[in-house]
Length: 428
Image 1 (cartoon, one colour):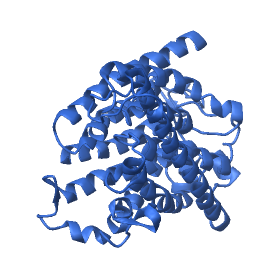
Image 2: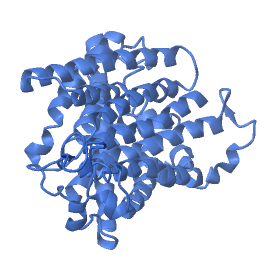
Image 3: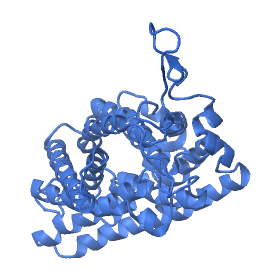
């Protein structure tokens, strides 16, 4: 479990690289800072009250756990506090990584234009009022109404993490508004090698995310691990096929996005389906998310790095397809339509997804509107033109001072100077 916790932690810098590489060169630091800042906000809040809200005894009709039960985690610190042989402090550390990562996922939708201080306040309030209660519904197997009440299958967070973050990203992008010049003058990814590296780190860390959710090194963890591999492989195929047919060329950004789409979709289903079912879910998610990223152009919301198209769409695909592909011989022991289980499980999965979307959508809008009214959400237009790295952090990700008007050494007076035109690959 400690290794799995460390793997999930590694997903945070992986996500920062994945998003940072897609950002403009003048906003790469801000994008990475928004992701890393969730350590500072959500990580601290988790120790104070987050774990209690997510895993405490039911209160207020089961909407969240008792906030005082594990305050500052003090009641978990005895060596004898264990569940099935696992120290509760290890489980608390593991779940802390989930909370931190989930909030970081939202940042990709609002790149280049959100005030950093407003993001910090929003992330605190969103974790407190949205993530912790929904984590209680989904991850508390004894008291959560989604997990134990209606019997929805979500092994590692398709609803609590991906649908939740994707829905929040949609609401925040709508309230924040479009980037300057979008979509006609939207910035291209400034460093696709960073994107590929980030996707690889996410895949590596995701084994802790999915297999670690078994909470013990055994059959269920191994089962989830294998399905995480094969679903991601087929998702890459699905995304690249769409690009080849639609655009004529498969891209590295498409491959990286396909990796994440497959990982998202198999997250809820990794212990519920056969490897064949996992391959089907991965392939379908690659197709669906490749189309899903185009929704922002059709409906006019500026989701900068496709959090909605990948996490909301992919989370819905994985959550709902459990209703078709679940096999009762898998560790999750649920039966889907294709394995003689009838339509009941599909209805349960749909109810869980809709409930998370509705609650998240409403509360996220309230939080964002409060922050907007008190602090403002968006940087000034002039600051956006200069670049959010400079305007918000007084820093730059890259030093161009030695790359312009540089005279070639040893050629003497009159030798041609080497200049790098703005916007070239060398400058980026």
